[in-house]
Amino acid sequence: MRVTYRGDYALKAILDLALHYDRGLTTANDMAKRIDAPMKFLEQVLLELKKGGFVESRRGNIGGYLLSRPPAKIIVGEVIRFIDGPTEPISCVMKGYSNCQDLNKCVFKKLWQKVSRATSDIIDNTTFEELVSQVTRQQRVLVYSI
Amino acid sequence: MRVTYRGDYALKAILDLALHYDRGLTTANDMAKRIDAPMKFLEQVLLELKKGGFVESRRGNIGGYLLSRPPAKIIVGEVIRFIDGPTEPISCVMKGYSNCQDLNKCVFKKLWQKVSRATSDIIDNTTFEELVSQVTRQQRVLVYSI
DNA sequence: TATAATTCCTATTGATATAGTAGAGTATAT
DNA sequence: ATATACTCTACTATATCAATAGGAATTATA
Image 1 (cartoon, rainbow over the protein chains, first blue to last red):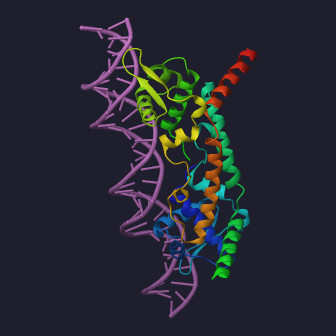
Image 2 (image 1 turned 30 degrees about the vertical axis):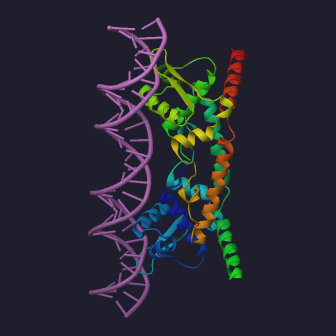
Image 3 (image 1 turned 180 degrees about the vertical axis):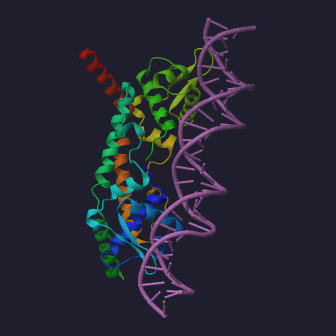
């Protein structure tokens, strides 16, 4: 698995929207500043996220973006796969691939399947609700420590 | 983590040598046929593996390659990192990277660190001795089932 | 109705990585 | 000598990545 800037921005964009969930729209411009992404690049990513059904948008003056589902129903693995493609470390372990002919190859296939499963266990069991609560928890800690 | 063809061939080459450990040299040509890799490409990979101290070679007539250590002392993670580079899913979790300024970014950093550790747990605890015994076990099963 | 703000859409670019291909040079057993 | 095999370097074609750019379409509001 390799997370690209697209993927990184996508996750950060959704977290940003999750942190503002139920509090109106967020513009690409504001978001870009907060997550430190080039705004025009972020726009492309947001457009993709819209096609993926993760976000909705409103055009025109005072337009912007918002989540199309509550943060609890958006899963990290789902987003990153949609943006960056399969998370498997090598194509031979991807679904739809025929079995290896050679047994020597198969021992590696098993290894990569393990890696693949371990990765999925993490990214498919993390929702943006959890991430939001992690952020707010962190912020409380910070406030106390000041 | 993404395993390239270079990495894939490197692992398969070392397994091939491990299966012939203590039984003389193996030529790039023979190996290429067995692991189904373009021979000239494999040569480049073997040269790298030599630089990495994983294999040794002998030139000239009846030359070839052999492992420079017993299979029990060669670890998958070591090889794949040497050939394909860091296995971290994103650069911000790599060693030598400064901490994130923004807390929002940090929740992802933690996530990718988890993925990174889970991956390392697997690839850094698998030796070629284990892979060899898996292969031979498999072959026994096959023989019985014939 | 004009305007400003905003999303939507597509094209282009520069850099880098990937997966080879090719060919000549060097060493060595017979 | 010669055949065989490793060594070294250069080259190429393709794809991916990370933007950058510019304008079209939409919408609230003055």
